[in-house]
Length: 296
Image 1 (cartoon, rainbow, N blue to C red):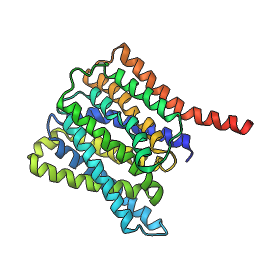
Image 2 (image 1 turned 45 degrees about the vertical axis):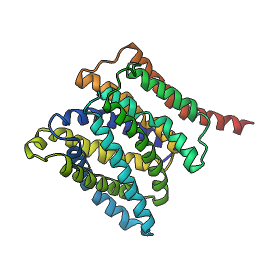
Image 3 (image 1 turned 30 degrees about the vertical axis):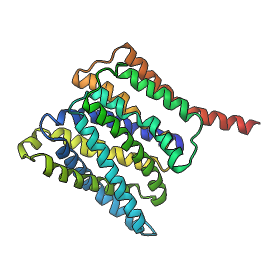
Image 4 (image 1 turned 90 degrees about the vertical axis):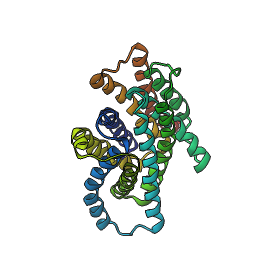
């Protein structure tokens, strides 16, 4: 897979996640956030287990204990990000949640420099700023009415940045995207069930009422999109991945307007254009510089 193909794959994952915000918000009319997390990732785990077993049988070297621990830690971080985002959706809109979650586009390169001592391509910094401004404009450009849910979603952005970095490292170390996905889903589902047992009541009728949303989130937002992330991040950097995955804010706003009646005004469409500009810069500038260097 080339870097361009990897980034386009991440863009597809962002689109699936954008639609997932609608499912996540609608589902909580019937079920609690922890129940929703538990069920969606249980479905995703069941889908990925056969693929992970097939992948393991074809691998020449078994995973070390250190690798298994690393995969489990990704699942813990995934749960913390999902829990803060899902609980946050109780008191914020789909559009705001998409915007605030997208802050990881700036947090990711900062954490990459601080903890991995890796300097991203220089275009990442202006592209991150442009993308963040674009996401801000999509939200309507108003921070005056931050709710508790908004603050929880900001916390989610930190966990998302950590998850992006960890997935990138572990996917390259293990070369087993299906196993990585299955393990992180299983850990997240287990922690979700524990949260549901402590803080919610699990009712069959409520689960039936949210069945469509749970299935979409389990099959597509979790099983497909997170696995696409694990596959594609072997071939691109964490900061670049964050730029393309941040398109979920764009798609969350568009799908929120389409299905939930949330409005995008003129300034919001300007924000959409800025997000696309950031992705184009990240994709084209490195290639343009490479061509220039080969010509000189």
